[in-house]
Image (cartoon, rainbow, N blue to C red; front, side, top):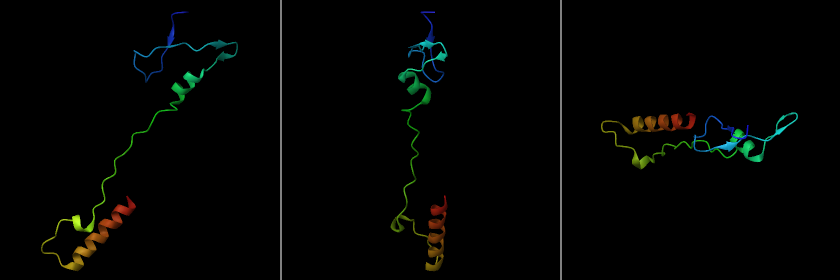
Length: 83
């Protein structure tokens, strides 16, 4: 039993942690085992947000009247706010 190692499924084979010490009632979790099981220090993937366009960065829409461009801009702004 001295050579057995406990290894969580998401860690590489190079990282070996000795089996947790046992008590009469079951397995006693060491602080290291708690960190590894609970993924306490795992950072979630950070999603990159799409940069918001300024009105001056919108490509010009040739052939559109000012009111159509305004409606299109308002529609895009509303879509950005909802999603």
